[in-house]
Image (cartoon, rainbow, N blue to C red; front, side):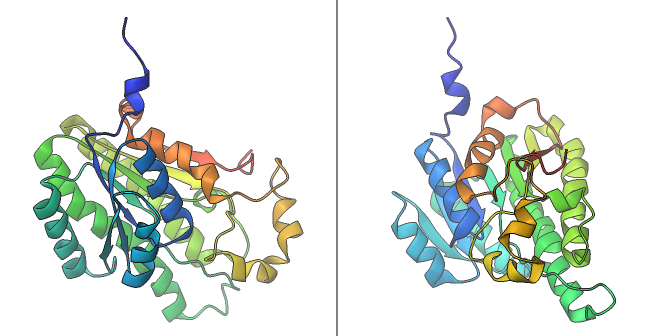
Length: 251
């Protein structure tokens, strides 16, 4: 009799998590490790990545600037040299800005898209070359409920995350026949050190929570199960989808 438990076994996988130095990225890395993956925490802040890696058994910390093709290329080369493969990529690096569209500067707009969308593309492109060569791999992008819901004052963030959701579809369709699956997670507002400073700007926690039928904010640990699923063979027939883990926000 076959066992379905092995579908979630990541024991032969090497995974890299961008933005792995804290918040959502570090929690996902911890979950992947518990299911057997060897995990690389990649972050713009190398010290922050090392601190997170110190708390995760066997994890390795690396520096990466997801807006730099050279930095990404060097990271992928180091991972390939150390481990000989790259099986899972979680694109968790991102920045969050809110504000009136008519007052938003070009610099703010471009900064958000550069990290959230272009960074996701560049990182996936580089990792994808390795995965396509292996004929196996799983990419997990971090989209958002803002990929589909029109929240006021989210112009740049929503545009970037909408782009991530659409990029996920295109790459999923392009690569699935070669053994590489690309999917995404769309969290609702999740409280981390990245989003916490913006809570007051949005009217306080109660104003955010009232939009979520479950009646609470997301927590990093709420996203981990979806990440493990999408990184594993359990999701092998799921292609180009954004799985909304949102407490009912998109209903």
